[in-house]
Image (cartoon, rainbow, N blue to C red; front, side, top):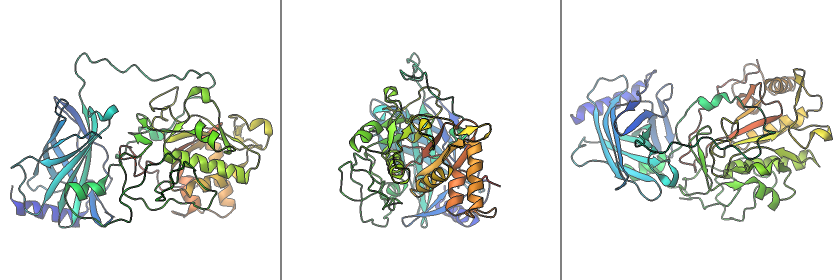
Amino acid sequence: MKASSSIVSLSLLIVSLVTSPGCDQGFVIDNASIKTTYQPPNIEVTEQEGYKIVRGGLKLQNLESSYEKATNRITIKGSIDFVKNDRESLTLDLEGQVDDHGFAILKPRAGTHAVADIKLGGKVTCLGENWDCSSSFMDIYIAHAGHVYHHQIEVQQHKAEGQIPDSGAYQPEDDTDHDAEEGDEADDVTGPYVGDTVRDIEVILEIPRKKLESEQQPERTGPVEPNDDSKDDSNSGPKGDTKEEPKKTTIPNANKKSQAIDQVNKGRLESPISALDYMSAHAPAGFFVLRPQRKTHFATNELMYVIAKIGEFTKKEVPGYILPIGDLSREKGGAFGSHKSHQNGLDADIAYYFEEKKLQFTFNSAVASEKPNQEWMLEKQWKLFKTLNRTKLVDRIFIHKTLKKALCEFAIAKGEIHQEDTQGEAFEILRRLSGDVDHNTHFHLRIKCSSAQVRCRQLPDPAKASGCF
């Protein structure tokens, strides 16, 4: 391949920004199944800490991957095409050594890449237990003329014949009073793994980045405010309502405590925080774990932070109320009960607020005869959702459609949202409230992957629509 043709290809890609970028097909070979994790609907150019990063502009072809467990060597071969461009492809032939933390920097094999002014490299992030690479994702990077092109694939190594299959989903000891199966429509939608793009570019492609005030975050025993650079590691949790938003994200620490692995409906959890322990250590916490015998009260640091904020809100706004908290995740994550999600420490079932004392100590329905229960505290619920939105950590909140309709009507009547709105606090809350027919006894809170959880797989954002009009 001639260097000039590849440079022209990349330059044309920068200025064209065509629509319909196309997707790779999934490749199945002797050693592994490979497919793209996520493609944006259009080619995107974003700036991150001084880098101009292009996504959706590459198409990987004829991929092959192998992992030698005995030597911890991993390889990826194939070719790279540029979207809407019939120029000659770049050869992809990368290899690397997996380290003790389940990462491998991928560099071109000697003699396989000699294109002037173009840098090529990648990174493997292993997903298996004990950082086994039977399951992993790979970030592929190409750099030219101040732009970095990023493409992410997931790799599933084939199991050897005769390997013992998985034993199935875990069933909690106490599943008799569990709520009906939850229809979380977002569970089947996939997005990219968080990864560590900025550091990858700096280390793998050797392109300097903007220096940050703090290179790493200290480990937390939490919950503490996400991305808080303070050195207090005292497990003290949030202090009142003085901090509503987390600070700007700093460089993730891959070994940070409480890691959400993969996505909510097929993931696991590393080094979690116990909501039961937090509740005991911070009594009165404003909430209580409803069924501790189920042993499903484990969370990431970020989810525990949000739950602690809910407790602080409850103590301040609804004095005397102790809010029931239902299922979070198992201690090591994974499937349980009839839940589709709750597998990686990002989900929590939380009761509604009721005026009637008898309804305050367990999960009770906030819907009666297709209308909100007259005991449901609509205004307090709306104010709580505002508080949660200000953390910038909420991905979605699943509630019954009748309750969402009531919240829409309340926000419209108060003049907080209008039909033409495409931004604003009320709009942002309502677009993340997903109305369904299941969540009449509790709302299901799901938070986003944080930048510190590099193995977490983030769902795409909900549509930019309030759903109220």
